[in-house]
Image (cartoon, rainbow, N blue to C red; front, side):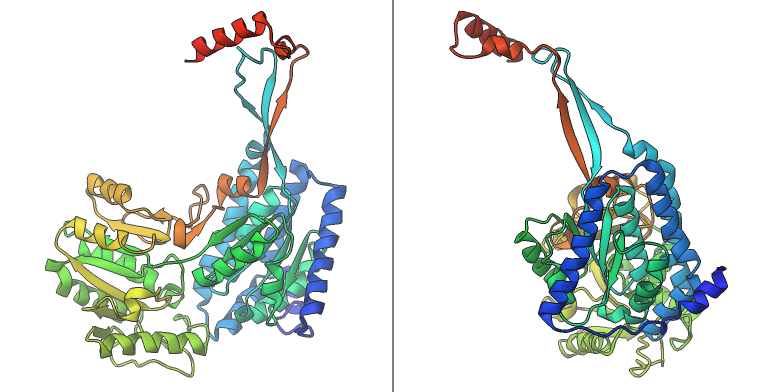
Amino acid sequence: MNAQSSAAMASPEAVVPVQETDPDKIRQMLQEALQLQRESFLQGPTPDHKQRVHDLLTLKRMINENRDAIIEAINQDYGNRSRHETLFAEIITVTDGINSTIKDLKKWMKVQRRHVDKSMFFGAKNRLIPQPLGIVGLIIPWNFPVNLTFSQLTAVFAAGNRALVKMSENSINLTRLLMDISGKYFGAEKLKFFEETGRVGIEFSQLPLDHLIFTGSGQTGRAVMASAAKNLVPVVLELGGKAPAIIDPEYPLDKAVERIMYVKQFNAGQICTNVDYVFVHESQRNDFIATATAYVQKHCPDINSKDYTAIIDDRSVKRLLDTLEDARAKGATVINLGGNQEVNVEQRKFPLHLVLDTTPEMTIRQRETFGPLLMVLTYHEPQEAIDYINQHDRPLALYPFTNDTKLADHYIDRIMSGGVSVNDALFHVAQHDLPFGGVGPSGMGHYHGYEGFTTFSKMRPVFYQAKTSFTKYLAPPYGNFATKVLEFMVKRKS
């Protein structure tokens, strides 16, 4: 079957499964899927390099042979999702990540030699053996559903595991597409997708999995972690937070604005690592507003264009509108960078806004905006920005804009965050050899690259004793010889 015919057959409307809402039936469905994968894993727990590469190439083929159908399904789920943004963030990034993983996988899988204390264990060996954990559960959000699904599956399959994937209720068309086509590439004993019907996520997080990765809000992340804890399931939490940018007044302002506003308009700002707010030197406040306005007029002149992505649902539009109204009512300055373009509620198109003169009681100060709203704060000295950021939850990302390497290092040293891009925003996430993950309220654990491989592997320590062990001479009853040997060792190790 060629790519065109495959994509045509696997249209988003191809499968409309019955939406199961009964908790007992949902629980049974999930447990049966887990049991199937568990039995399969036990029959072949350590797939070799050839099998893992085959699985990764099959993942890539699944994406490429159904590319147009995937793009259209995401577009339907959003109401309008820029095709260019989907190609860049969902397709190209993921397939490139698979290629990168395949290139390095053999090296990652090698058994590692570890040091042995020869004074006590002469002739013995230590090894660290990467082995698959078993069954990994993935709970996927709606904002980059293919990227997050397949980049996580890349790490899971590279480590030799099997996967159960619970998709978002806002990704219904994509979910049904993946449910329809996945069986053509993988058996259910290797990979299975689930549609959210109201209780699936709750039951999914309670499964006795070998590992669980959740991407979403901090509030839901806490609930997922609590559920997983009942079975002592280890979790990776990829959450969010209010990621700040700080612009050094000596850095070219037009370049900083260009890079910040590009990321802010991408996916209509619906990115967990997006710039949530920006610190601008007090001397550049007006220049920043003017430069940001000019950027938007040039690059986003029509929010109703197919190039400008919609807000995912009505509830999110209302949340953004309420955030702006709250700010206005409490004295903030709100600037619609779209000029005369108002929010298109019906099409869920929301113009970019700047929000200035904010105060602590405003919603925009307290919650991640997750949309095309950018709060602007001013500072006089770098320490003011550092103090403000450190008084709040540790963010998922930090974005210092400066050509002064000492100042950049100062920010990196003094502000803890999940990741950092210097003189840009977002793109540390696209580096396949850098781990991605938060810290504290913005998350825990990592994936991408080697760290993703180790996250979903048991890096298993193995000690091989030599033919002769000196410990037999130290067995009780302890005599003079044991006393002298132990005293000698204490002196040597002190």
